[in-house]
Image 1 (cartoon, helix red, strand yellow):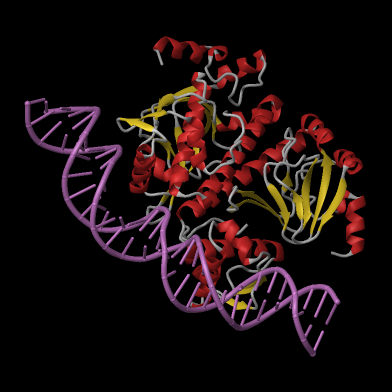
Image 2 (image 1 turned 135 degrees about the vertical axis):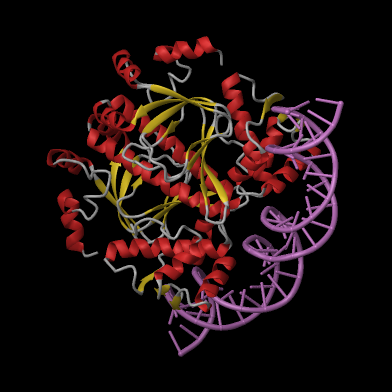
Length: 248
Length: 248
DNA sequence: TGGCTTCCTTGATCCATGTCAAAGAATTGA
DNA sequence: TCAATTCTTTGACATGGATCAAGGAAGCCA
């Protein structure tokens, strides 16, 4: 992202890349002006920690660019990712002072922050915001339930295929590919992060990625760059219904 | 639940057992009167299906009494429970016409229903309702994330101990036991439903319940009646942090 | 250029949980 | 009271994924 672009939306919400999908999506011009006066940006480098579970959480935020993850860690070190925050997703919960999960930037990350207290007042005074937040939270709950099916019942191979399909789908949505033809993208995460997402070990992730490659379901160049020659073939491997809904 | 009690709250919301926890919790007297004029009750017998995934969903509802589950089924029959609805929990999503999950009554069930269209108008016109719904949805999301850790990373023994702790905790909250001493309750579900909840087979559930019994973590009389001699001992078996938060 | 460091792959082996099978216990209905 | 049905337990065995171990590949900095 270029510096000018950054400066442009940092001044003016109407230039913001997530203007129409974030928690502010429904806001009118006057409401945006209010938000502009309150917001501030923070940047994190790939791999850095945004918050540790148990930390004081003085702000809520929207992801503007990059990817963040939410994860929980057990005493003995077992870790499970429980949320994946993409641009426009919301971080934090009104009414909660302490972060319940570790929040990590898996790529370079820019977030648009609001101090918690004033934002909580906004929720009450600005229905456009609380309505949008409800909608987004319901979407996240649906995603979490899809994920629970994956964690509880899918095989390692199905898990990998599902994750690749999710990422491919998102990429298709962003970059306007015709998803039914071959296309190409980069995995935005390490094998270890994939394992944490899927409830597997990184060795199993590596083996199953290799297996899908050997079977021609995906093509790999380097470690991260993937081509999908036949999206339907990939979908067959996910274990999901043929008609898994629209690719968004 | 006696017939008089039923009749009493069916007429008058202020008598309702879930008055202070459900989606209507924040409503004022005049708002309650509006709800009273719109609501209708439906009853389901234990084991019956409330909705199939893909069904038209003409209403949203609050669980008044009993337990319902949300579950997803894969084409080959693998099933994963993705939600557990207890009294006061909300069923349905404003703006959604089709049920995305199977909804099953695991005990006799009473729900308080609102037709979808009028309810959606309420959401917009009555902030007390949409604010409460947001809060409840955020709580559900937290629960789903806790569950994801269980599904992805816990052992079978830890999963069983966690489920028993969850049920015990809920029972403690309802029946005002002192949870630090021995107490007793019934599992409200079959071994198969436990397996669907935990991402296990029913045989593994049965074996691990037997193992916890042999090790003195729980006492069993019959198949469903459980006594926990030492709650801390049970918590040690769940894999969660010693301090897993308050027992609510 | 070369040597860290991080990330990834692959092999050998183990074991927790799934699968298949049989039978016991509780519940229901005739 | 006796089937019939549903729920549960237990055993024997199979297997998918974890664990342990080694080394390869790519990126980074001196």
